[in-house]
Image (cartoon, rainbow, N blue to C red):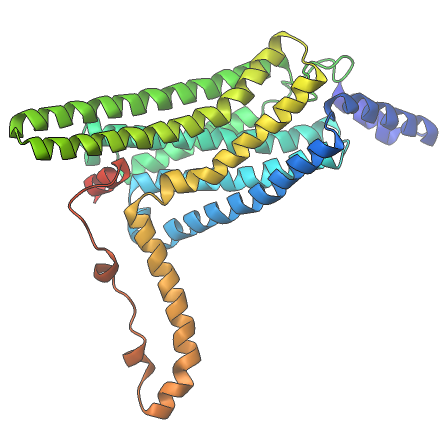
Length: 378
């Protein structure tokens, strides 16, 4: 029905009638464009700053993983790479579509709007799904330590990523394939998204809530297993000092997971609550504006993900430092080649690169579950 209206607007032989239909269509979309000028400036600042920062962070993480043969062989870094790729899509699709609609007030037809929204849905769904795979990876490492390498091979990790992205792409394309609001905008089915069916909105929200719940359960089981292990080690060794040190490590692990889950739930729960409420009641313009601000939290979550999941892993930090030092060393060598020829020395003698053994200074204590996972898979 939405496509019929769009075709009528484009193909009408009467220009006045076509213009009138287009104006009426844009007027119907005005109920979603509720931001004031001050709110537009605030959200525009968040998107213009958060979008590029999120993009650069995740491109850096994905580039380091893609250029490191060692990291590409480990399932944990494949999941982190999938998370970075999803957050790259989120920074592009969400920022452009959100600013295009709310700030520049672009009136798209149903197909164009649902295509843009499908990109945002795919990106955020894949991001949360990749977080779940990362949590399951850490869960298997703790609970199935002896058979971790057998259970989670590189091939199975790639297969799970293929299934994840296939599911999220299919779910995101459902509105384009026909699962949309039957009345288009007369009256609208949702106060938050034009052309979206309430049943689809409820199903997608439930899907994300299930993923978040599984993430919470996985990290809770990891903490439970770690606490039991630390308690048993303390009772076996009987050394008060060592026991207290291990408990401090256990508490530090709990604080790390607490921070991760707090940011994850704090970023997603407000948006999901608004979506569930939108299915049951009619939202006011004030609530619509609040939802617009809450939705930017999902973008900020994508900006924080590289710091929480990627850069906390020591091997990835080492690979990043190696890449930076090779780049800096290359330019230093290139700039000093003429001077070296004048002094009679070769460039190779003066531009030695930092080896893996030099940078990979290992300590006997593992900093995080990421370290434990990498130690198991190596």
